[in-house]
Image (cartoon, one colour):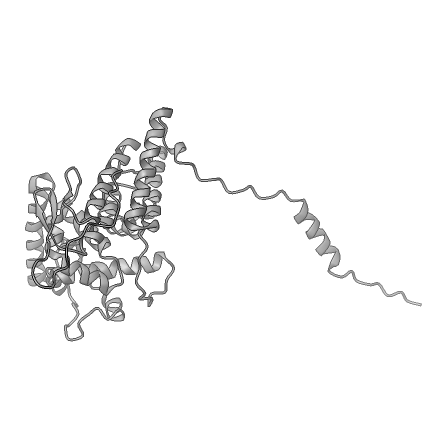
Length: 344
């Protein structure tokens, strides 16, 4: 009589795996994010004063622009302080400098929200380059579903940089741009001057925007799309087209960053875009590394400010923005602002 040997089923192996799983140590809990006080290596009394200022600034932005804007400010400030401590690229050397700059920006934003004179003294901004193109900025941004403040901040950063060195930077740029455009027309290409116009958009990137612009319905179907370097350079001299190409490039980045499909055309409204847009447009590698520097830090506040300013009409007088009031039949009666007089 032969004996039949029974093969063991899968259960012993399963039990062994279960015992190993139960016996394995639990994964360590995620490290808590450092508190604001941990990011301020200062004597106790001085540290508490700066913490109190930060909380006042955050509360002010909450009242002025809403909870999302306040959270975006808090995120930026903590990122700047972490970068200072870790030795990564930061906009300032010390926490006091970052909070002092934030205070000046929030004061200006509050003045703009209340439709009063806006004091820009001490703020690195160039509204004289942005306000004359307010209509083009709004139209280009809305065409790609972006907040206009993001695009305005990019223009301000680029043009403010061009004003440095007593005009030498802008003068050199304009000479090189003119030479490059002439070479592109006569020889088909130019070995210099890759970026042009208000947003300093490169002609190579401009040629890549056709599909997205048509998908958003933002390109005039009766207008031929640029096909050559010379045609792209000519188009980028038009302020609206320059801004439209820049907005399209920016929207492609935001869709990829937010894991949205390329064909997604919904409007984007997250205030954190005010940091990401100027940072990425100015220096993509630094933005990817979550570094902070002058253009990205100040660009965030410029975006918040211009988002408010572009809703009205303003005149520039020195370093002050003055609201232009409408008078005559049909003008609304003047009335006090319902917003509290927030003075951080």
